[in-house]
Length: 513
Image 1: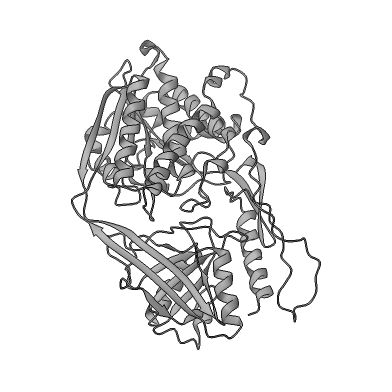
Image 2 (image 1 turned 135 degrees about the vertical axis):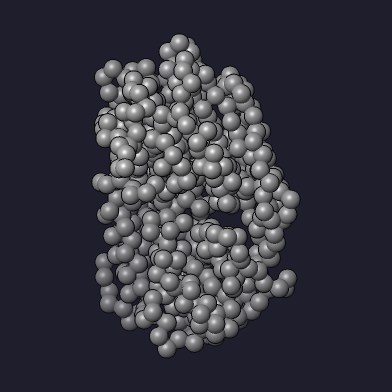
């Protein structure tokens, strides 16, 4: 398949994703590139892919507060973003200390720094019963060193966007040099007649919708490559017009490493590999990936509360780990949760019907120790919980697929959403999101993703969550607009106030027994 057809297939598929409402944080003006295949028919060109164009926060469309909701103006998107940047700086400090696999990584130094950052804010705000709940962790996977390049026709090109998938197995210390095979989307038809044994298989992965969920995982392409005897699997995460690093995640929820090494590569580096194969110069790909399991690590949940006038509570929770900057995932959630704590700390206790319990859980990407403990102790921890409010992935620029690249906008993308409880709770949530300008998908999740997935049956619960290009190094503060932070967090505050007018029985889903 020539480059024009490949690009067209990819662009069409990505535009289909965009049409159903997927947004993303990649603020990059992107247009078609002239075809390099001289045999391809001429067609009008929109020019070369433009450099990134990050829009300033003041350029975004903002939703006005509805009448009677003026008090929520005290919740500032700018302040929330400042808190978000503090969390991002923890990730960057860990990277700058020489860690090639970086972010707020559970069990490692950046995780400990995040706990101390949270404790500092809890105490500054004036939360009570502030404490860490420690957990021992099983040996934790990490990548200590990795690199890739391709050599052909007398030249060697480094593949700088190469990045290991979580729980990947490694290579010998010197790395491996392998023949590359390009299998497109990696469907069964793509593999027909292809000899991949002992080779590095490159698969074009379509983000659906983001860096965590991609076609090569759900269409079986990776498994086909491994069953065919591949020595290495590389997935091109096809964010057209970019060369992002991506950490799509491992497949082994039990902590087992993958059968053969797996890494991800950016779109531009992937195109370099494919075009060198197309030139017939018999290229070789050098790949190196050193991994290890680190024992005896600990992590912790961070707890605090604002006492109310009854023994009932509302749990406001967030997870703290994230890859790369992790601005959307999940610095935005932690910052939004802290903003809610600040807002309600200024409300007199006599006006707080229920205790507000603030919980930040660890290990979202590494076993979920914190939230699993909550679920296992639900009969005591959540026995009198009126609502679980999950703060995760609050705000992201709406991005559209255009030709060979990506086009940003000056608005916030629509959210996945879930409400678990009574019809009355659903009506409160959807009415509030509409009035506060929080756009939602046309239907809710049948089962919530994110941290809420572990406890959504344990008490009335809800969340909004965005999910495009998280787990990539494009997840930066520039792509988490203030306008989405304040509208989402303000909506949560209104929901808390409305829920506090109702008894728990009115919030719970009717029993089917």
